[in-house]
Length: 380
Image (cartoon, rainbow, N blue to C red; front, side):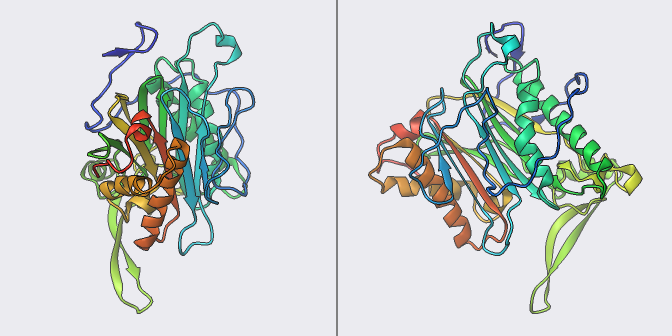
């Protein structure tokens, strides 16, 4: 057991190798101020800086599509993020939010908070409005919960619950019944404790011991998963395997999908038509309950990678960790921010070389061991 500042509010910490667990926590009163849908932006990566409480940390001298830090924040020594529409699509529905140096709200100024950082990727489908909404609002819903940061798991769970409630309510009252949805994967670092919360099929992994260890930090939520399949069927849903017609006319097996909704993921925010009884949906099939893992960040941990399924569908966890290290082994620049930028660039290039046709997004969150390892001595 590890305590965060307040011994009366404690969290169970896990070994990062253990399976993430989903929990339903008691809800708090409904958020009084409704949050509007975000408008379209020209840049799919949006490193958010909320008015008075967060600061931007960017390194300007990096590749065209990469945004990287230029300062450390507590245990986070560097980060980099890249998103790309991919080889085929002419649009990108992936969104990213990164908030560093989360500050206390004025009414809690007397409290002692540890360094806090937030990293989120939102893989949208059926349009980008849900992913935009999550990018702009999910971190605020979590941070403004009165239990944050000392009981972060409950704040995260309530933040996801409120995000779903607000977005679905707005979608249902919009003129054309907004149909978009999104997966959501966040990494929240509070002091030296890491919380990973996921719903959907984006994924978080971690490199340890200079690449000798690869940890899976999240579980993919797909209809083909045994537990998700049972939950869907028990809830009155159906699962079927779709097919893909090739240009030659050949029909190939496609992904498993859940009905109602016809989605290839089993947990999302949004997707009104899959969840609304009035529109033929079933709220027990596609759900918005994340699974949360919490663990202490040890000196042997190198970095965390979070990425959309367009990356993980083509590369194994080990290949992604290797790609993150490889370019830096041959690089003379020991700047950790450039190392992080090199890492995400290399992963995107590796996914493209495997002909990934989806949008591609990767975020790398580096700890001390990533920069401390002498180049040329990586063990991947």
